[in-house]
Image (tube, rainbow, N blue to C red; front, side, top):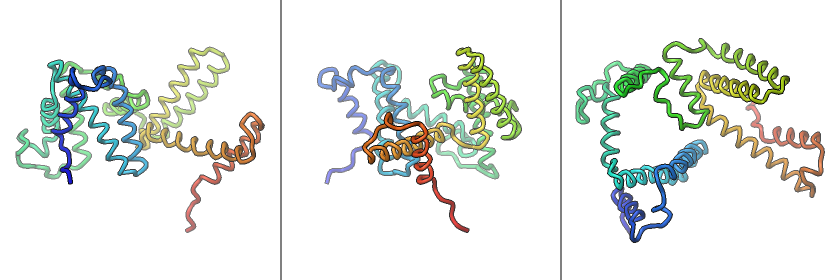
Length: 276
């Protein structure tokens, strides 16, 4: 039986794929910019496998995500910017620096000194260290360093979280819910006026407030929206199947009939509460 491949084998494979003489034509065409969207897609597929508790699939998806890092490392090596060992070195140094309760002397092999530090204190220390690092880089603003390239919903949550750390936040969920109702009223006014630019602005404010509600409820807005997407797909699929069983199409029935089929699918797919 063949031994399992190693990280060194993966690095060698990547170098072979990018070999100018005998490599893969597709891989040779890629750049940092061209594979960045693939990295985002692979990260989402990892999240989906975790949400589905599909750990066999997760192993494969994590491999695909790791391959993205290996690809960047190869591109960096070719351009003389960095290589995989430099990536690892930078990461380890940063993590040692951000965990002083585990590495009090700043040494990877140093003795741990966790003492009475709990998870809340660790998180507070982590954010303080990150803020200090931003200051060193010249990014002194409270919201500095929140990546512009993040999905808009994820970036909204991060911006809100960063602002909350300096006290710019609603004290509880009730203030957020009131804000959502206020934004809905403003959206209705904008729709009534028929100003598309104003409608877009007010709708964006409403979505931003909904993200804030998710943050206050300690929910990931991207994850819960993915859940709603799956639920919609399942219910829509049930409606479609019901129509196909009758030899009919969506255009053959009224909106009232579609609404009835939708409600039936919703009732069938909604988990029943357990009896006490």
